[in-house]
Image (cartoon, rainbow, N blue to C red; front, side, top):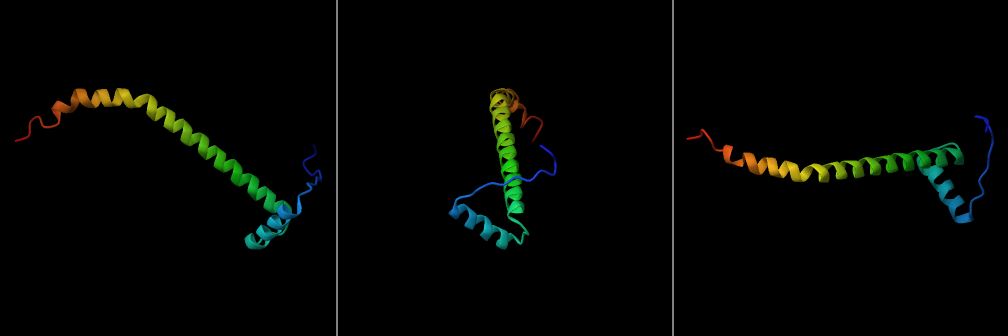
Length: 82
């Protein structure tokens, strides 16, 4: 597809009303800008969700060993204090 190619999407009446309302509310010039902004937001949201899931898995994987290390070193916390 050419970078400047024209395309069209047919929307049901309710979705077209939503696009038109968002265009006015967001102060955008065209329906295409509304769709582009929606796509960018969707991409950012899914990227954020994937990152959260990766952190959750990494945290779960390291949790057991961290707790074991804390338990092993816990007796040292008060050492040397009067």
